Image (tube, rainbow, N blue to C red; front, side, top):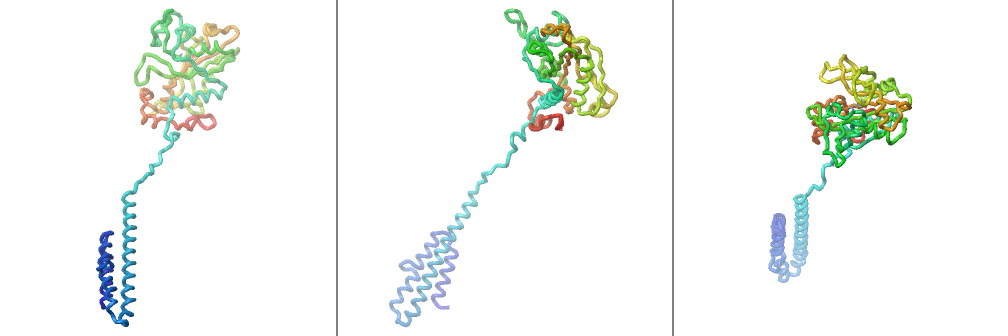
Length: 360
Ligand code: DAH
């Protein structure tokens, strides 16, 4: 191997192992610097014979060009590698896992769902919704509903009373939704067909009672409303609400100051399995109170009992929600525990309708 070839392969090996810019620069200076090995060769051309110079000149210049090129190629390669390495080292994942939208994550509380179901059923029968205040006067909560002063039925309601005002009137947290019957009679002319969902309050608290609970009241007033109409409305409601094709009902005589006659209604059920089933079996479960509106109540609402008559009913919402959806403890309803809600709650866009299905 001649001297130039040896020099070239030695330089090529140094270039290949030069791993940073300083190392490459050192190789460059050693080969092409003032006293570099290739520079020395170039200088030696001057002392050669013309023939020798003719063959050595292109050979040494060729070597010089190839080494220059190899140095710059190595430099570029190291730069690229450095950038690639830095990109890999500094890689940052700026994407977040996709979160479900609020419409997907949020849940409708079972009480709201059941109120929507109840109002969908009654709206289909031509009922409107009415509402009234949670803080009521003694007049609307009791007196106008034919509870006589000092009558024990007032005490039966375990009422939350406010302190009496300067006129000695005691406000109460309404113990039932019935006061809205009077408010509606005062505000609109018959025929009246309303349902009144809302919050109600009594001093009572255990697994099946909460001091705040929910009722839905119904009121129909016109010139001919009668017990047969009432039975039909309630039967249609119960079948539709419990989503069964047929359901036996039992009407038992009872007492409420605001109705005459007064009835309590039981529905057929089967308690033999783990869960209560409706529309089958030989057991009964009480679900509501009802009756023909008492003439005194019509009078308190500004209506003439000789002209108008009506029927009304009242029902606890929380308990029928527990029964329909198998929720064992009422207290969990009001704990605001998001785990409970995501288990028992309903999808916000699945509005209950009679044509689309109530709970589907
Ligand atoms: N207000 C009654 C209660 O809370 C329920 C009730 C019974 C309402 C009979 C009515 C009715 O409208 O006719 O216990």
